[in-house]
Image 1 (spheres, rainbow, N blue to C red):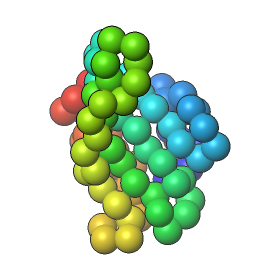
Image 2 (tube, helix red, strand yellow):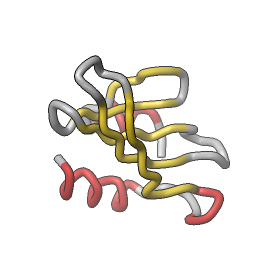
Image 3 (cartoon, rainbow, N blue to C red):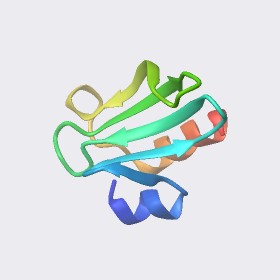
Image 4 (cartoon, rainbow, N blue to C red):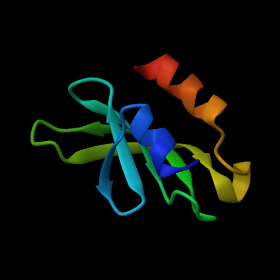
Length: 80
């Protein structure tokens, strides 16, 4: 996975190597550690102030191998 692919899909860079795609007022899909062995895909929920209150790891490259565009597209299609 690379930065340009995430930006094309509508993700915004929130901190270095971490990206977020808002899918509703309170939920987002986050991808972090792009291009590292710690690459991960999360679902997160925010409170009314925009702070993350809950996070679920959907994919972690240390266990699941590299994050593929197909897997990311599937998660986006389910939650967006």
